[in-house]
Structures are given as structure tokens and as C-alpha cells.
Image 1 (tube, rainbow over the protein chains, first blue to last red):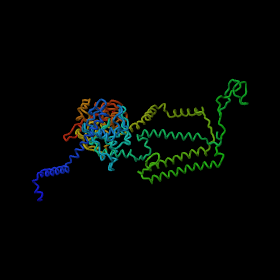
Image 2: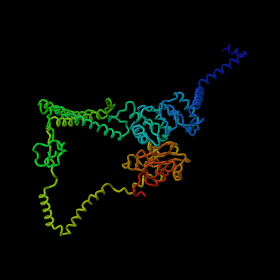
Image 3: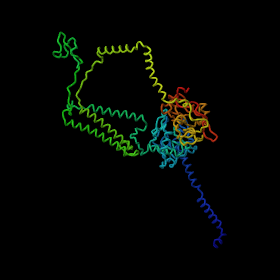
Image 4: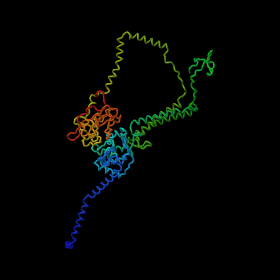
Length: 270
Length: 355
């Protein structure tokens, strides 16, 4: 201690103290300030937006306008949100091949990372629904599939059919089949209302109800969905069932009748 | 076989040969060109000749009937033993209910074996000797006809029906009026609807309840492009008349940009672009909610009637006869959407007294 106090008047003492002080402040700052991480994330986000903007300029701007404001060939993307981009791009609907009544699902063009960058750019144009997280759409076994069925029949079945097989709309538009659609995409579609589908925002259909609907669709269309009645015949209703009975049921009876009558029972075959 | 004796005609050289001694006289008789060839000689079946074969057939028929009995027992056994929700994999159908599958198969086999056995029995064992039955005239003989007519006339004379006109006319009246009893019973087809078709559960001050969450709706809940279904406040699924009431009161709510609304009245009856329309098609009353959020058209799945929600629910395609009724809405002092009264016109399909 004595040694230290003896050297306190050393010309370099001030420098040493300054160095200690700087190290302590820096250490404390590093320990307590979360700003670093935030900064890094922000940098990453703005990087994603920049990358997304480049992708957008090449792949989307011709229809949606250079600033996402929309043109006569494509709607405005201001405020559609990241969820809409994720749905349209990762189901392959966008970029569209041609104008028409409806843009169909096809193999996707952009990778998951590119989709995220595009989504980040479009989300930066105006606030909209964010891409749902896994906990929002994945099933954890607590869903009420029966309630989901009821919600599906009152909200969705008018277009998508009671077991999600899809159906026709006006002027060449149609509601696609929901068979084998990723739960994330079902969730995003309900949230954002792609193309002519109306949206079902959380204010009128809360997150839990959306999950119930996904659980119902998994129950009727999923990997190990059971059909207690036997053949589903496409699951599109009684017209098909009646037609099947008339064509194949009656056809089989006629075939058997002809077979029976064509064989003679006589001893002398002629 | 019909007789060929009365077919007389001039002969020609190339006609078929006459049967010997069939006729005599100056004119030779021509054969009937459409003569009934009669039945070919009867041929026996194996079972008619060979007693062993007949025994085999008998055993086959009995076997089919026995199989049917076993199948029926199988039906009862499956009914008792399978749980109603047991699912099994059966190629090529897939995962089906074990109970449904076994009940269907056993009942089908039981019925099929009865039919197949009966056919095999009829074809191999029952007699198959050809039998012809001659047709005869439908007319009764003249004697019988005369007798019946005489009897009828005698009855008419003895009953005095021609002379006592009062009796005759009242009888005709009585018989003619009896069918009216059946006509009156048609009244039992149901009570008359009264004014039920004209009114719904909606009334002034009733809040719009979200059908999904059963919570009252606020204007800010409804975003552009969304579709929401609502029912009137105070209606519960527990009510005994819930289905009758919701069938008339069902409501769909969408939000349009106010400048897109072409119809003046629709704009007046909306709230900040939120419009509420009946969900019941005006053609035959199907629930109609195939809403296309870009065109704002609503399509009915039954007969493709299409309504334009930006133009007062006007019919733009299909058989529907009049526009979709709109419900006039506003916001109450707590900030919830509420109705300003019932629908101005009856919802659903037209009827005679609708006006």
C-alpha cells in the first residue's frame, strides 16, 4: 500500500488511472447494456431488407411497382405484411407465371432465406401481419378438433368444402384443396386472406381458434386420417356417392346377370 | 300352334312343298310364310340325366344357403365384439372403421349367398321343361254379355233410379262431396307462417355478436378484406328455437372502402364502410357466404346466384329474384356495433304474400 501511495505522483500515474477507469466503464457497459445485440440484429434486419429490396427489384417490381405501390398488373404490397409474402412466395404462387383468374400453387422459386429477405423488405413498406411463429400454428395436442370442425363449417366450408377438398367460385376462380397444405400456410392464409379469400384476423378469429381449425383439417386430411365409412370418393359429397352407386353398383349387377344368362345349363353344349 | 288350313291362295311354282293330304280341291294351298316353327325338342341338363350331378348341385345350393347363415351369425358377432371407434387398415380402402367394414361385408355376403343359391337352384334343379300357354279372346261370349246387360237393366228398373230423380241427384252430390274430407285434412300440413317470414330476431339496439367468439363486435375488429359472421345479441345455441331464428337472422359483415360503395342507401346504412348483409340467398334460401374479397362479390353455392356487395347487394348473375337485404348498423355509446332495427324487407326466398 505504501509502495502504491509513494508512486501516486509518478508522471504515468494519471495514465494508469485513466486506463483502469476506461476498462471498468467498458466492462460494465459490455456487461449491462443489451444494445450491442440489438444493434447487431438491427444491422441484420436492415441487411435483410437491403437484400430483399434487390430480390424485389428483380422478381416482383414489374407487377407490384418499384416501391411496392402496385400497378395495373398487381396489387399494392404496402401493409400486406411479412405473413402474406411468406404465404405467397413459399407456396410458389408468387412470382406469378401469368395474369389470370387466379394464381395457382406451384414449385417455389425462392429459397427460405430469400423468402425471409423479401418478407422483411415488404414488411418495411408498411405494418402488416408478421410471419407466424411455430408456437402459433403447430399442434400441441391441446387443440379442440371438434370445435375446429364447427368453426371450419361456419367460416371456411362454404368455399373449401366440409372436409377441405376445395371448390369452384365465379369466373374461373376456385378455392384450392387444403389436403396436404402446411399448417403454417393455412395459418397465414387465414391471417392475410390471399387473392380472393377473405381474411380472418385475430380480432374476429383468435389464435386458438385458428389452431383448432388446423387440428380439424389434420384430423380429416392428415397423414393418419381415418375414414370410418370406407372409400371417401374424393370427399366431395353425396352426388359422387350416388353416381358411384349407380354406375358401379348397377353395372356390376348387370354384368353378373349377363354372365349368368350367357352360360347354358344343358348337357349338350351347342 | 295355329292352324294352317285357312290360308288359301293361288299357287306359285317356287313355293315350299305342301304338306301331304292337308287339303284337297282345285286350288292348291300355300304355306303360311310366317308359320310358327313351334318349340325345339326339349334338351336335358346334366342334372336331369345324372343323379350324381343333381346331388352335387343340391349340395352347392345348400352350401350357399349355409354360408349365408354363417355370414348372418358373423354380422351379429361383429356387432357385439367391435368397438364403434376401432380403426383398422384394409387394403385398398385405407383406414376404416372395423365395425362398419365387418357389418357391411357380412350382411352383403349373407344377402348375396341367398340370391346366388336361389339362382343356382332354379337353373340346375327346378324343372326346366318348356310350357306354352295359348292366348284366348278377351271378349266374353255373346250369351254372357246379353245376360249381364239384361241383369243391369232389370236392376236399374227395379231401383227406380231413372224415375226418382231426387234420390239420384242427392246420391251424386254425396259421392262428389266425400273427397272434400281429404282436402280439408291438407290443412294439417302445418300452421300458417303468419308474419314469421317477415321478421327476424334483429331489433333496434341489438349488438352484433361474433359467431366464433360469442363476443360483441367493435368496428375496429373488422378489417378491410375480412369476413365475419354475426348473430343478434340474446340468441343462444341453447335456445329451443335457435336454428329457426339463426336461419333468418344469420348475418355476414365485411368492410369496404366507403368510396367503393356505389349505392347511396348502402352507404347510409353502413358504419365507416362496415356493411352487414343477410347470409340467406334470396333465391331458395341457401346460406351464401362465398365472399370474394377483391371483387366484393358473394356467390351462392347452390345455383350460382351472385350478389355485388358494393352495390346494395344487387343480383349480378343467377336465378335470385331480388337484392340481398342489408341490416342498418351503427355504434352504441360503449363502442360496439349494433343494429338500428330489423331488416327492412323479408330475408330469404320470395313468397306470394311478400309483395
